[in-house]
Length: 173
Image 1 (cartoon, one colour):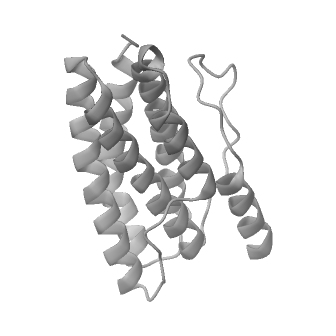
Image 2 (image 1 turned 45 degrees about the vertical axis):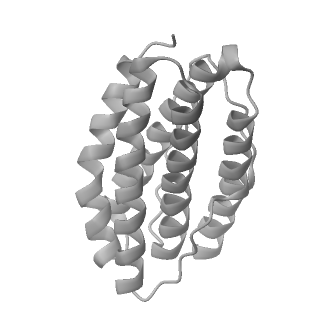
């Protein structure tokens, strides 16, 4: 079962995603990651993607609302990455400070986006990333291996869910 979970998680991390302005027609299937190492790798990658995307947004956006949102995401994702890495270390897990290939490709796509499309792509990417994080954290906080990482997931989840509501409320400029 663990091999299947790891294979599924690896395929999700390695699959490129095209940033889109359209909302998905159906919710993604719920996959609960209960393996601490898999969760840590996925959650840290997502947090680092939020940091990279928001740093790019702060460099490129001309919209004050997008700038304020990017500043908030940047602060929260830096905190999340630090908290997750400390918890993983406490649970004797090795977690690198790197994004998955999928997150790295998304960050690069955002960096090279045309100026007129940038804000819409950033916001769409953040909405999608936060939706994924909520699902990931909820599943692990509920069914994950007991330890510091599971505790961290539960502690970080309320802020991520608040960010989810804020991201949903933002309309593309």
